[in-house]
Image (cartoon, rainbow, N blue to C red; front, side):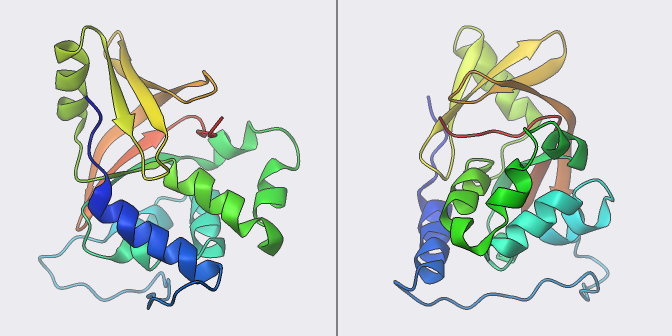
Length: 188
């Protein structure tokens, strides 16, 4: 059973439309020095900025103009590839995606890493067990990922059959959850 994505998909599609000139939405500038109340944890973007291992992901989110959207209340679940994961891509892939003329393609790759709602590792394991060893997850890109267990590790397989492990699960943020991955999902 796919996890529903409609509320966030609408927001991200609005952001995509804005980048193509079809609509306008307000975005919040990304800054490493956001002021949160003492009781509020950082949002997804702020958390990714602070890890030291998601610089490529943050640069891509900024280049795709998705930082404001991913700073909104959500909730969102983001499978966040590390810099090492991006470095595993063929030479030139990241640089090509970051070019302004490839913004649409970059946006598609990024929304392929996001799911509407807060989906914990326990939720994923329960779905996997309930569905006979694997569960599909509908991403905001409208493409499904497949989750399985390999021992105690959640492994996510993209549409092209590339398997990626969740290396750190359940990083809670003010607007959702981050699961750190050792690979990048590429649609198709």
